Length: 574
Ligand SMILES: Nc1ncnc2c1ncn2[C@@H]1O[C@H](COP(=O)(O)OP(=O)(O)OP(=O)(O)O)[C@@H](O)[C@H]1O
Image (cartoon, rainbow, N blue to C red; front, side, top):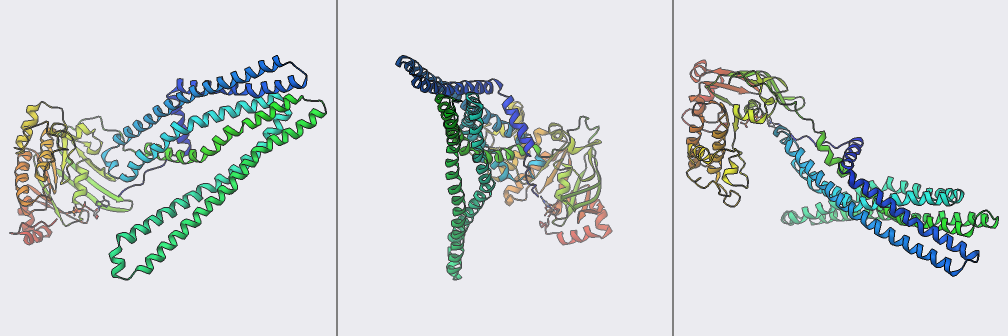
């Protein structure tokens, strides 16, 4: 069963964004301060140009105009230098922050307990760690700095136009409100329209892939027309959705372009009237109009990136969603008082409401060899995972020395119980690193020798470049068990996938590993149950019989029937 990964809510995303800003306060302060200075410098231009108009209309000399023009030039250069510098800081901030998000994600992913990792969809986990983080990183690096510059500039320009003349400024700002409504209208529809376009594109790609992959079937069953119809339908849908987004854009952009002119037109009209009335100078009207024209640049930037900001905030919500995965309670701090394993009244379900274990109770005494038998699907592996602490029971308890096994910290758990299955991961690292403990080479070699790994003379062998075969990988897994030195080993089809020769080698290695340990064998071979001290028979998630081989055969129940069907055949029944 795989549970969908959560997505962080808007508040959580907001808090995470604030945390990222707070983590790099000096850079954020420098970005804001430099952008503010650049914006102030940018305001100097229109103001001085207004003074030029006034100087000319009042018959001022060439000298005055030259001086003011030099001022305009100085302001433009200062603005350029300051905003370049601010942008450079912003880019570096963006890279650092993206790295922080990546590292945080990796830390969270690696910190998830195995029981949680096993349940989450691996593709989604990887997509969030790559595609989504890349989307956020691109926004942080390329888009956010520009948006920040645009926002600061807009605030200063609006303040300046209001200062130049509150009435003209007010009318100008009011004239901008059209853009707000147009943008809201567009954004409300754009998300769904683009999602529909994306979905239609995916469907078209799927249809094409299905037709090409199944070309022989199409030919053999005369499905050509049907596939053509499906392709045409997908193309029509793509065209329809594309036209829908195009229609949105063809309304939005002309409207926005027109809206840009509205404030300047309003200010020119009102300014003209006020000038004729002698209430403002021409320079003031000119400066106000120039300021409002200056707004177009930052507004454009904001509108262009606003959609991108929406999609990357959705990505950020997915990345942050990892932090919302419910985690098991913190590890137990007390140590087990002995090696006795007690399973009491255990229930377990992979899916809510569908118990696969019902009220299982069992004691495994230290040194005992217990075989769990039963038909496929009886719940043997599930019980093995609970005893190994991989999963925790929904009800009841699974304890070692009185402590719930699933609550033990990983280091402690490894010393108590280890589950050996047919899946054993070999990392693309050296043999030494693959043994996963920091121990002297002598000890590592001894462990390898115990499991008969006579091929393992070079601890520096790179297992990525020189991979192991199945039997060798199994020996490596068993050497890890020897090094972990648990008092109890659970075997779940540990040698099932190996060919007979390799299985024999592995069985020998296994015998060496199991020496003087408690063994719980999920038995799929006749002899395992026969040789065990005790046999537990499972059916439909319950233990139906418990006793030694001889007792159960004498009782002539379910085990006896299984035994009779196995007897002499050594068949794999599980
Ligand atoms: N990851 C899972 N998600 C959902 N259901 C599962 C999962 N693993 C096992 N089950 C179900 O739980 C029940 C018990 O399965 P389990 O693997 O424990 O039985 P088993 O006795 O070990 O069988 P086998 O011998 O085939 O491995 C079965 O009905 C199985 O379909």
